[in-house]
Length: 93
Image (cartoon, rainbow, N blue to C red; front, top):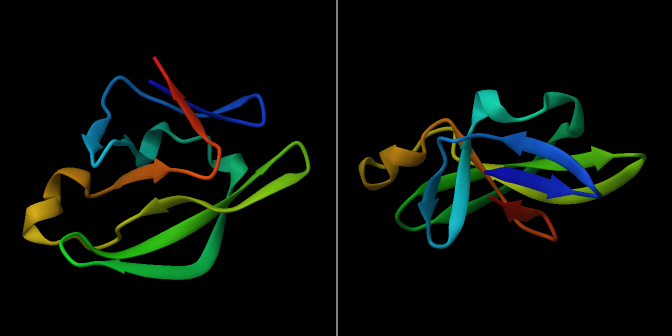
């Protein structure tokens, strides 16, 4: 699977986990040069507290377009150490 934004592959892996229609990519599959840590946090009742990355590709920013759970609940352990996307990031096979 590939995560693509702004015509650029920002993550690629054969080992994604799909939860709630989101592909979670292993952290080591992202292209770190396109990610900038964000101060944004949200809480999911069953997964835990999410942290975010802003994507920066070809001088354009996609604020908080990637998220991950630094600590996950027991129910969400399959996505520990994985990153998912939204806000115009496409996932392709």
